[in-house]
Each structure stands twice: as structure tokens, then as C-alpha cells.
Length: 577
Image 1 (cartoon, rainbow, N blue to C red):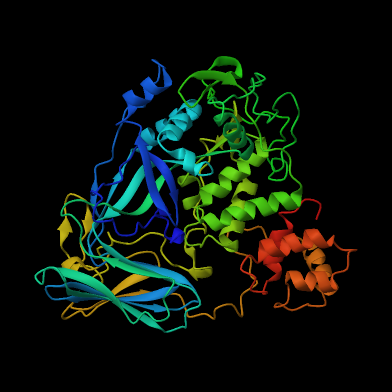
Image 2 (image 1 turned 45 degrees about the horizontal axis):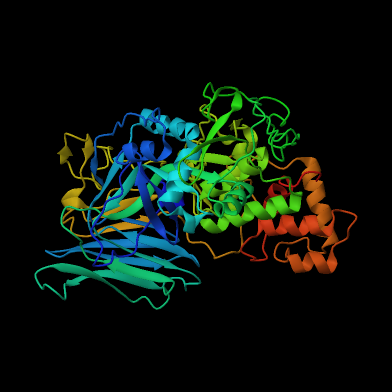
């Protein structure tokens, strides 16, 4: 669902009956991942006085909170989002909606809105102010999080919510290795506890056993079920976490004195670190100064930053870095972040390695527009890497690595062309044409004067991406959301055309790929696996280990099928090729 461009998918399981309903709101700080959803530790505005007292810092102050007017109908009831499937949505008189999803790929996910979804969001200026606030107070905010229970989540980055899409009830399902054309349905049924109320139940889900659930409406008026989050993600280096764990026994976190270098060079403890990615991305080497921010993010002039022990006592100290890695270790380390399903984890890891920083900070806006229309798989990974290569976006100051304010990632494709589930769709609109008054077949003439948007008939689902609304012009009783992509096989055949935004292979790159294919005795797609490399590779082209890494990077799902273009994109990731 990352391909939808709504932020990080965060679908909470049903709330336990003994837990009071609680909405996620901007300013909430906690941990977030695809499996555990969001776990709140504190809120920067609600707990400002408590944090100030904990840190013994009278100067501690959070930015002024400024919210965008709440969008109460960001998604209307009956809306459906999906990837790897197609959807049919039918209104049921007096009972809501019936959703039918049919698998079109081997894996995918579906989300059905059985209640409207709203969005609470900070203004863009306030969100940026929160980012600067995090940079200036990273030590204190992490220290307070540990006091609130982060000890059990020492590897988890902190997530600062700036926007949340949420609802009162929903139904979702994900599937792996599903048979094509196999349907699953989410249908309204009488509530077991109250026949006058409507609940929802999944049926025909034999092929969708990975995870299926539906949740009847919760507490009226309380939207305690998050769907998508936007926010800042603050990660720490492994060495910094290791130092904290070692010093925890003594009850004090000690960080070595910073060397006062404010150049963004990545030089720590007096030793020079040659950045692993700067020159490769076409950016500055680690010995040069990238254009820096005017903020002293360490909290003190001259690079002397403020840190706090577990009791809130202020300490001055130096960052502890990740340490240099070999290229194979580097690629392997980055690939591990794909498993978290959150691109911010990958970007933070990249910056921690690049600068040997103690902290790395990324906002979901730094990647979500680039990945719109793409899954977070090898295609999305390569597209994002290519965007970083075109414009070196990183800065480093006083132990914290982050994106430049000028970084403005574009969508995955140019105007008039989008990438949907890895397939080029010429002419597909990039945004839902919900204000297109000429689309009489899809939309009614009812107007919401407050929002300026055309309202679908009887709350028919809004148009989304490559989906469009088809309805009977006479009765408007049945609405169908249809993915306009042409059906495609699960893996084969695939086009070798260069994806949008990717530089076409050079003559030298094509020649090297041909050498590799000849060495593997596999000029056609289908057998580029690690086993084939070990069994038949000639070391006069590339060392076996490097090529194995390349193939693993190209084909993380081990399907054994690659195109020349994918192999070229992988080769670009390994220096010296």
C-alpha cells in the first residue's frame, strides 16, 4: 500500500475490549512498524512540561502547534484501496457496502472502508519546525522515550507523527501465493450482539490466509483505527545503542566529547571517515562540506551537543558512529531494511553509514512521492536509489544526518505516465479527478461547497489513481472500482524497457552485462540465481561474492528471473563495476 502515496500503511488490529479508545494525533511520539503498528510513548505538546522537568532544562521549548483544518471525508464510506487485485463495491440498502476483491497477482493487499476516514495534520511549516526541533533535541527526546518504556525497543527508531489518516472501522486482507481470479468478499451481516447494528465478515477467503480481519464500528465518534501515518523517523546508530546498553548498568549514558567539527564531514573522534556513498551518488566526498543548515543541531555552539543520561542529567559528548563496512556488508545491511516495509528505515540506515552519525532523521515525504505507484520491492528500491543518485540530498551537522530542505522528490513517473504495481500505464492520471465536472458518468452534480470537491452519488467511492468509477447511468445502484492495468503474468514475460526516471544503460554497462550473461551461460532471463553464479561464474568478469551480492540485490524475492536493465541497475550499486 506504499504505492498509494498516502504515507506509511499502519493498520492496527482490533483494540482489546479492556483498552480505552485513543486516537493517534499529530505530536504523538512512539515506535511504528508494519507488524506492531504504532505504540505511543508520549506527545511533545501534551508532555512538554514533563519533558522539561525530566531534562532539567528550563530552555526546552516545543514549536507552536498549527493544524490544518480536519478533513473529515478524506476517504468516504465504501472506498476501497488495493494492490495486486481488482475490486467491486456494491451498495446494500440499509446495510452499507459489499466488497469483492479478486487477486490478479501472486501477492497483494486490500483495504475496505466500512466507515469514513479523516485526516489530522500539521501545517507544512509546523511539520518542518518539528523536524528542526527534533534535530536540536535528539538526545533529550530519546532519553525521555527510554524513560517512558523504550528500553524494550532499543533498536526501534522514534516516530514523530505529523499526520494521521484514521477511521472507526475497516476491513483488510493480504495474500501471498494466491491463485489468480480467486475472489474474497467482505459483506455486511447483523451484529451478533445487536441485530439492529451492522457488522462485517470476510467470506470466500481460502486463498487469503496470510491475514484477514474485519472490525465492526467501535466507539461512536472515536476514530481509533489508523490507516496511514506521516511523520519524522529518528534512528540511532548501532554503536550508540551499544554504548547506551553498556552504560545502563552504571545508570549513566556517556558520549565521548565531540571534536567541534561543524563541517558535516563525517569525521568523528579525530579520525577521517571516507563516506561510503557521497562520491558514488555524485555528491560531495566526506572531506568536503555539503551546504549546511544554519541550525546548531547539537544544541551548543562549535559542535558541542547536549546529551542526557537516563535520569535526564545533561552531558556533553561525541557521537559514536557505525564504523566503516565493506561494500558487501554495506549492501547486505541496506537490504535488511527492506524487511521493515518502511522506506524511512532504509534512508536512515544509509545516512548512518554515510556519515558514521549518531542519529539520522527522515520524513515520509522524503520518499513517498518518489515511490507513488511502486511497491517497496526491488523496483521501488532501485527507483529511490536512482533519485538519490541524481541529486545528493543529505546534510550532516553535529552528529545528525538528514535531508536538505531543498530536497523535493518528484513522483515516480513524468507527467502523463505512472507506474502501477510495476507496470507502465501511459496516460493514467496521477491524482484522483474528483473535481472533474465533465466526468458525468462517474460523478453526480452534488457539490460540497466547503471542500470544492464533487461528491459521488450516494457516497460512491472516490476515484483513486488508476481506478475509475463505473456506474449505471440509469439507476446508479452499482459501483465498480476497476484497475485499468492490463492483466499480466505473475513473473513472466517482463519488459526490459528502462523504467521511468532511470538512466538508460550505457554502452559499457550493456557490454559488462553481456559478459556476465555469457559467463553464466544464460543469455536469456530465468536462471540468474546465486546458485548459478557459484556453479558457473568465471571470476575474470567480477569476483563471485560481488556478483552474488548484485544478484541478491536485483532479485530479493529469489524468483530467478531478471532483465538486463535490472542487472544494470544493480551493477550501479557496487563500486568498481
